[in-house]
Every structure is written in C-alpha cells, then in structure tokens.
Image (cartoon, rainbow over all chains, first blue to last red):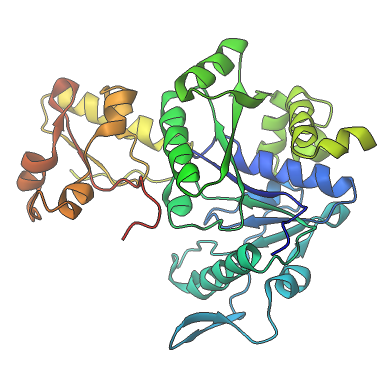
Length: 259
Length: 103
C-alpha cells in the first residue's frame, strides 16, 4: 500500500473542548489552499457541519449504501470508499467535503444503524485500500474514549488529542493518549480554550507531553458558535484562528512555504 | 427520587449531577451517584479528585475479571462497587473503557 500523502487525522477529547471547531476550521483552511479534504463526523450530535460553515446538517448519510450479508455488513457493489466520499458527501465552501453518520433523532439511534455500519465500512476501506491517498481525511470523533476504543478511525495515523486545562478534560486526554498509543498512532496534544500560559504548562505537566499547539479562548469563536456560523468565516482575524493556522502550518509544512 | 442527567458533551452534566448529589447528601438524604458514562468523571465533581477518579474500578471491569458477581439490587451494587465520597455520597462507576476493542 502506498503511504498516504494527505493527512490522516482523528480529533479526539472530552465533550466541549473544541474538537469540531478545530476539525472543521482545519478542513476549511486546507480546502482554501486547494487541497482535497473530507471531514468524517461520526458524532451522534451534529457538530462539524456548523464549524465548516454548512449550517446544521442532520442527515444520517449512507443509510442505503450498505446491506447486511451473512458475513456481516457490506457496501453495495460499486460503492467503494472513494466513490462514496466523492458522490455522497456534502460539499461545502472551497469544495470541502463532509461525510457524517448516525445522527440521533427523536426516534433515538435505532434507525441510524445502517448509516453507522456503512460509515464504518468506509473508514475501514480508507485504512486498508490506500484510496484517496492524496486527500486529507479528518475524523471528528464523538466525545470520550468509547469510539476510539472501538476503532472508529482506523485510517488515522495521527491523533490530535484536544484538552482544556480542566481536570475532567485532562483525565479524558490521558485515556485517549493510552488508546492512541495502543493503536500505534502518533499523539499530538492540542491545548484548547487556553486562558493563560499557565494553562498550557498545566496541560503539558499533567500529560507529561509537549503541547503541539495551544489555542486560546476567543470571544469571536464563541459568538460564531452561538450564531451557528463557521469561525473560519467570521472570526478569521481572531487569536484562536491564528493558532489553528499555525497548527495547519505544522501539520503541513509545505503550507507555510507556499503561502 | 431517581434523576438522569443528559445533554451535549461539555455542557455541564457531570458538574450538575455531582453538585446535586453533594447538596442532597448534605441535607441528610442517602445518595448514590451512578456514573454510566464510558468516560466516567463523576468522581471529580463529587470531590474525589482527578487521580482517584481515574483509577476507580468499574462494575464492568470487576465482572469481566471474574472477581465479583452481578449485583441485581441497588444495595448490592453499592456494597460491592461503591466508593464513599464527601458527605457520604456513594459513587458507583458502571463502565470504563481503557483498552482497544473491548469485548
């Protein structure tokens, strides 16, 4: 298998730390560079779409893409991961793509099962087939360790572990780091909603790891999220976006040279 | 009374649940704080501290290891899996995921 030249990221952490903000903003930045980018959102609570500037997207996609065979769930013939991502994802600004599954509705999760199984097949194909190797794949995972434990991001070679300096968030981050390492993935710690330098130091100290990027609190981001808008579209000049750009520069070193 | 606290991640479920538990215990009620999250953090908000919360044995782990039996009653659950927190709140962790591909 040819190693992917695009990013293969899973964004993980406790609820409310800013996973969707970081995943969605990163995706928009890379798409604006002209890169091919898809965000895979498997959270039952819709999130990434808003951060990408696509409004609230509540569809559970791919409900008809898979079927249950005697040997388990399979994608229909002709439905490879590349085909599905190119033809079934929602298209956002600058051509950024969003594929999401299993959005909980008033009926609960039961009706979302085919969507979840098809989505799972797509993530596995992405991991094993070397497909879309030149695309950036960014997984916005549900909060907490459960989905990483069940391997909902098998394509990811790098886990962005997002945490605030709060103790619940840090305990979660420590669990996520253990899980990522069991997978053999690289761990990059992102300190989020940082109020001061001591927050960043607290994160590094607690996790005993360097902080790869520190993203400050930013009123403009909070206002964007309250209004259902993408921080990328309305908070571009703020301190948080500046640091997400720095994160993109570190993840894609050629980016800084080109811009 | 039996209360379930639900909502989006980061909205404050655990903080509200843990603080309610402490307040009710202070007013003399018997309180069981049941943490059903696979990322259990209720110990932090009832005052056990981050380090102790991180190592609380879950009922699921105890059962999987074969060291304990299923407890069909609340009293049994608390006796077998409860951890005493300040004001006498009993914290019980149901499930915790620490390993990949758990059975």
